[in-house]
Length: 95
Image 1 (cartoon, helix red, strand yellow):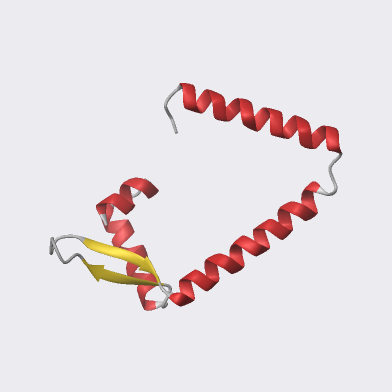
Image 2 (cartoon, rainbow, N blue to C red):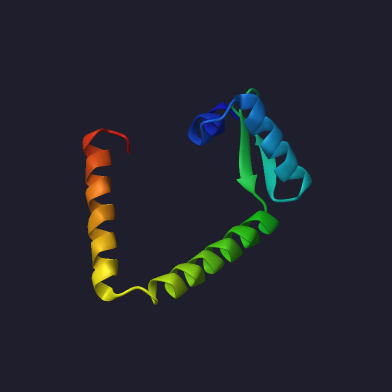
């Protein structure tokens, strides 16, 4: 839970509440670690996996639709800007 909380930049309590709701909804499962009882692993359930795939497909379709309405020059400018931002983030050790 603490590793997830750090990754999501929330408190452990907030992450525990979120995972509780996801488990109740059937979107993920808790698994005990066989080597350390204090560790609880969180894994997507089949229902959660299907939802993530559905969201990814919808997001991809939305992006294709939006970018199809933008000129090639604007798309290239956008890519250039994103690439520059990524370079800056890497230089500053943010990623």
